[in-house]
Amino acid sequence: MKSIAIIGSGAIGGFYGAMLARAGADVRFLMRADLAAVREHGLRVTAPFGEFRIERPTVAATPEELGPVDLVVVAWKTTSNRELVRVLPPLLHEHTLVLTLQNGLGAEEEIAALVGAERTLGGLCFVGINRTGPGVIVNPVEGAVTLGEFGRPVSARLLEIVEWFKKAGVKTAATDQLAEARWKKLVWNVPFNGLTIAAGGITTDRVLADEGLRRLARELMGEVLAGAAALGFTIPESFADYQMQRTPPLGEYKPSSLLDWQAGRELEVESIWGEPVRRAAAAGRALPRMEMLYFLLRALAAQKQARR
Amino acid sequence: MKSIAIIGSGAIGGFYGAMLARAGADVRFLMRADLAAVREHGLRVTAPFGEFRIERPTVAATPEELGPVDLVVVAWKTTSNRELVRVLPPLLHEHTLVLTLQNGLGAEEEIAALVGAERTLGGLCFVGINRTGPGVIVNPVEGAVTLGEFGRPVSARLLEIVEWFKKAGVKTAATDQLAEARWKKLVWNVPFNGLTIAAGGITTDRVLADEGLRRLARELMGEVLAGAAALGFTIPESFADYQMQRTPPLGEYKPSSLLDWQAGRELEVESIWGEPVRRAAAAGRALPRMEMLYFLLRALAAQKQARR
Image (cartoon, rainbow over all chains, first blue to last red; front, side, top):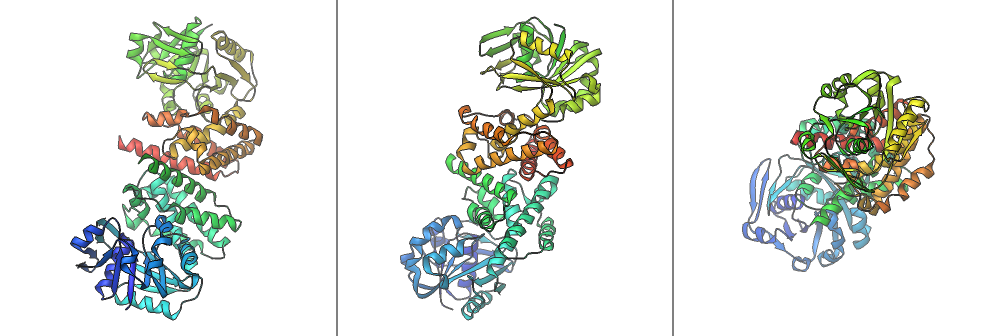
């Protein structure tokens, strides 16, 4: 394995970075809030297979201290992406690839605009990882990762990265359809990450227990399918039905956006709701409920920001 | 003037009841929360023309104590209407009329089901009256009242009641189109009473200052027009444009539902949002944003109730 920089020390960056480090990769973490705690106590991970610790990970507050690497993994909230213009350049050598594991739509485009589309990769994490404290990561289920090239079919270099993840113990697949996969992930995230917040901070079981919200969740899923279809991605209604069916077993589940909301962190309003609505509209498809959810969440987030 | 029972001692009941009593009418108030305060201190009213007090109004906690009257004015929140089945009978003689001054849709139908459609009248209050404490009513603007028969044209008996209100100093008009007038009032109430709550408890100026919420408010108005049209009421788009234009001068305005919400009172979710959505749906017209607002407000209200 080669050198890897992880941008963001939250749940996703902390967990996959620790897994790769544990497998022997040269992993370097760019951290802000958690830097001091991780320097002192290392990264502590609880995974389904047990607990482990990365005692002395390479961590730094600036990209210059990390230096150029072979792969940059962007794993902070999309709301921080405006800082990539400053953070990415010191991490790049001539052949560095940049992989975003972020939510929603738009991250590959933002990265491609900075480093070139030909260096840009994307991935989706199907997990429920939580950062329970500085440098403390808890992952209750095995989950899976899907990686793809940005706008291109699977390549040898992508398969090599898939192998790194697999060797690190992460269930990982390659996809030729990264853009479609992002829309598929939105089918669940748009309604449940949104309604749990807009309905007052409730868990997914309570969304399902409310007849109106449950219907609204399914209608929002229908709008995600319609938006995807307008962009040429055919996702069957049965996929949305399955997303509804898989939710009750999650119990009193808090989607990542609700956790962000309750912890006072910025919401990924644009990547999860705003950008899909805009792309569908540009393709001629209005998504009224999704747009309304976007407007409400954006307003709620703006007020929370203003109250600080 | 004849005898009048006012059901509900909130802003609307307190103000119009006090105005009628001040003009010499035999006004009897059915009160719950404010009973003791009003018995001790009377009803204190601040109107645009000055302050006045009804020193010893006739008040009671049960309709039996008030006895039959010529006119019953229903002025509590529509959420209390389930109690009308108990409250109305003791107030009725053979020719008693029942006038609802409540918000939204459905109150006339509920009353007609109890006392007969031929006794039922309805009215709309275009005011910003506030009950600032027990028996304390503040009305900053003159406002106006529109009264109509339920499903019938203006009658001699209705005009007589209009005269009572006018003699009491209330700007009052009669309408042949009560049902249409109710939809017209919803054009403003649906978006602004709803979005100020759903967007986190903000005043109308802040709804207008948020680009998304402002657009959403106008789109919701369009849905109210579409719902009205499905039921045969033609309200022009220019009416909605005017409702948008008249809002900025209100400044940091709190619609009545937001005041209810912030004071911990029940929201009139069904009469303002639920019933219009159901009637439009029954007439074949889906109103997606309005239904979504209904579902969200209903869920928010249910949680607030549960937390008590």
